[in-house]
Amino acid sequence: MSVRKIIHIDMDAFYASVEERDFPHLKGKPLAVGKNKERGVIATANYEARKYGVHSAMSSKIALQKCPILIFQPPRFAVYKAVSDTIHSIFKEYTDLVEPLSLDEAYLDVTENKKGIPSATIIAREIKEKIHAQTQLTASAGISYNKFLAKIASDYQKPNGMFTILPSEAVNFLETLPVEKFFGIGKITASHLHSKNIFTGFDLQKKTKFEMIELFGKSGLFFYNIVRGIDERNVEPHRERKSFSVETTFDKDLTSNFAVITEMYHLEQRLWNDITISDKLAKTVTIKIRFADFSTQSKSYSFDSPVTNFQDFHTVTKKLLSLMNYENKPIRLLGVGLSNLFDTTDLRDIQLKLNFER
Image (cartoon, rainbow, N blue to C red; front, side, top):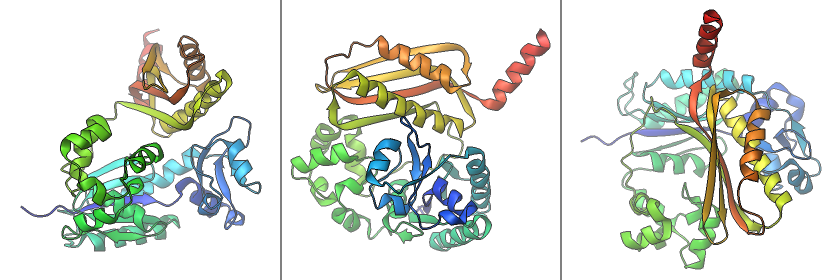
């Protein structure tokens, strides 16, 4: 059986890079895409801003505290979508096995490709060059024999990087990798692992399946495999997304009602941005609260028709939050999701049909 050839392409600071391209006077200055307002949230930040500790999903208020000279640029999602379409058309020159993860990120299976190029590294280099020629933007590429390793590789030499992990190198490479560099291990989980003297892939490789399930719950078997370079997931070009969700685990538990309301509002903005650029609409809103003792509550509400504006979404989320019994309980995680999805084109067809029937 031939070894698979998987490429992971990830645009570098995508929204911010588009703004720098279109407004050259912004280049070299700390820049955040988002709104500079009390309850604003950062969609992305360029690399100059990241040196100050500014990052996506951060509140605008905190971002300004970290970087007082930060420049805010309002998002232009229609422009980002048009650039994304150009990038994805380049992918399709090489393979139809393209799994989009977002506007600026995708997996490609080039094991059998349209140009008959035997080297995935050559294909990745060509794609990066074409993206730059057609959009004046840079991308980072990771190449390996499975999705997990390709993702790790694309992050390894950002920005404008390219890195290949060969099958013969994978296990040794993973042994030296800090656990916080593993895709799927966040800051909180990494801190928990450090407390158990687990700092690298080598430390994880010493754990049994049972111990990995104890550490990661239902994801334990997945981590047991990937730390050994095993990931059998296919690139799925026609995967139908069932929902959108965002959540945050806090470094310090939330203990005030104001903090809960503020953080939930930030999550709502992130989620609404995500679904807006996807050309999807949703009927069902779900919120989740996890307390310091790890007990969890969730509540949902379904509209009669897809919600089409942020204010209606926010009103329902606020109402669901008011129905939760969370006061005087320290909160470690908040989440909000949208499901029961419709394509915007489907909604237009439904509306036209209803108007006709009237």
